[in-house]
Image (cartoon, rainbow, N blue to C red; front, top):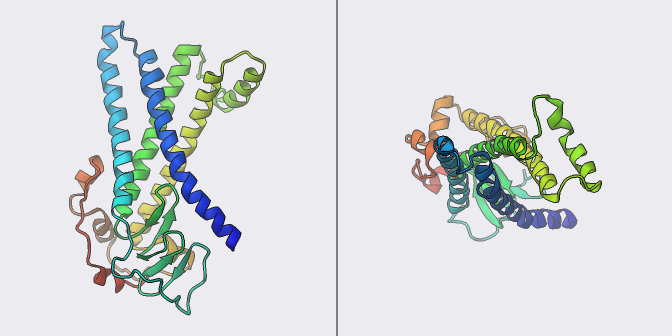
Amino acid sequence: MFTRMLKLRLLNAVAPAYFFTATAVTFILHFGFFIPTIFPSQGTSLEGSKVLHTVIFLFLMFNALGNYIMTIKYPAESANETVIPVCSPHCSDKVDAHYLLNGRHFCKLCKKVILKRDHHCFFTGNCIGNKNMRYFIMFCIYTSCTCLYSLVLGVAFLTVEYSISFENPLTFLTLLPFSTGYFFMGTISGLQLFLVLMLYVWLGIGLVCAGFCCQQVLLVARGQTWCQMQRGQLAENRNPWRANLKDVFGTRWILGLILPVQTVETCSEDADVHKQD
């Protein structure tokens, strides 16, 4: 168990660094290569499209980073419990957390008591629970949109700059192995191979975030958490799905869709503790 905890702590430190590195690389590729190449400044007819794509990318990136920060700013930890509590008799002794009854968990990575814990996110380095679930879901949505949008512009860049045609669906599937072979043969540059690798990175992250977001929205609508689902425990929340979504996204949910702002009042911890997990 000690070795596994050590791996989890290492992942908890590496994942945020990976996220910021990928974000910086994406930003540099967009404004250093994609936008100038796809929309050259010589053509005034493309100036409107250039501005539009720039605004779209900045909007997606702003919301992804904004909700990332909000997820960390509003942690799901309990401010009333600073001492490590004794584990309950019903604890399944998971590696990363202890179940403490009354909707509370003690996260071994955060070393804090978490209210209505869903899971520990390694990319944000904290637990996702009752206070930051909305920001985490929006972070997943906008990260997925940013990655898939970057994938589209990356394909357009390779088409314009290197005359690669993607009319055949097999082109994308064979692009990485062929590009790797051509790189070692000295036919293509390291930059072109790196761009091809980033296409697959964006595709992978975009699809994973989209799938994970759908799962989280479904759990929220059912009034259930990931921890409850792992233990095979049915949600005791019998509220309609609309009420469950409103509890997480708030009454100003439309504003929360376009801006990373607080849209729901922070519930009192006494009320949260009485919600059985």
